[in-house]
Image (cartoon, rainbow, N blue to C red; front, top):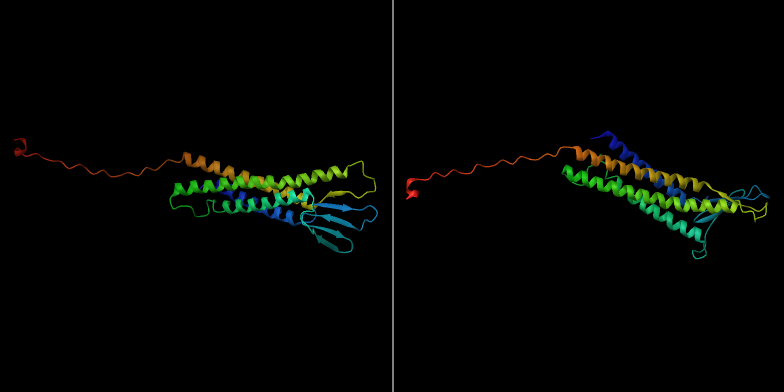
Length: 221
């Protein structure tokens, strides 16, 4: 067993798990945007996908009452993040049995290796997709927040939205997913090269000698 391939596989699974945890935390966190008023610095407003929180002396959160009344940013972010969670979970579940350290697929060695390569390749592609799905809403919300912050049409003392901690957690999760998918695909390529250079064992089949018939004199007549 090549040690470098096993290390790539384990790192890919670990980064995939880290990306899943970060994307789950990003989805649930209410700090996608933070607003601090200049007139009252003790009051902060937090904006998330599922609720809005106000911090005065204590934290008070209120979930969104209706789905139809939400802005398009929240709806799209919910769709992308929930889809990324599903794709990420599926990729992690396929990556674990694809490890060479885990027995499975088949008893035959060649069929087992081809099965594990297929599982890891599928898991790597799913991790890449999950990373892109996480980065799209996080980067879009960050872009709109920066545009609104530097909007010169707003009064100088008007409260402005700023980047929240959930966005940085989402960028981390998306990066973890991309690294995990890359490592899993590289391990598949390395395993394919290793198998192609390995000599193929051809079993020797014993050949039975043909029976020798001796003709008698009566057969010539």
